[in-house]
Amino acid sequence: MPKALCLLSLVASILLLVLFGSDLVMGFAGMQDAAPMGATSLFMDIAFLIFAGGLAYMSYTTYREQR
Image (cartoon, rainbow, N blue to C red; front, side):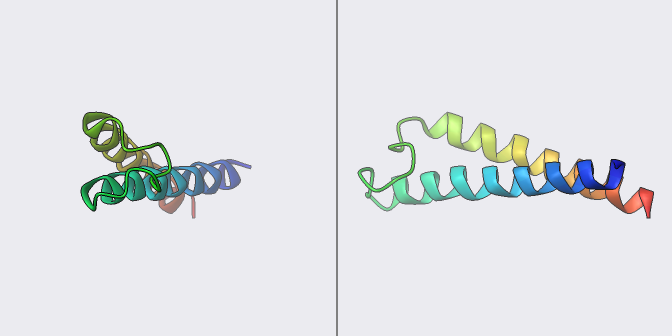
């Protein structure tokens, strides 16, 4: 069960990385209308990318310890 929870949090963090990363890239590319969240806040996109990256790192290292 703990392995499944680690994998679930890893998948969730990857989805967050993709969501906020695409919002950030589309905001810089000038496609605010096509961005997932409208590219309203640059600070929010960067902060969530950092937090999701940290969650992905912690999930991966915890999963690797449980093998």
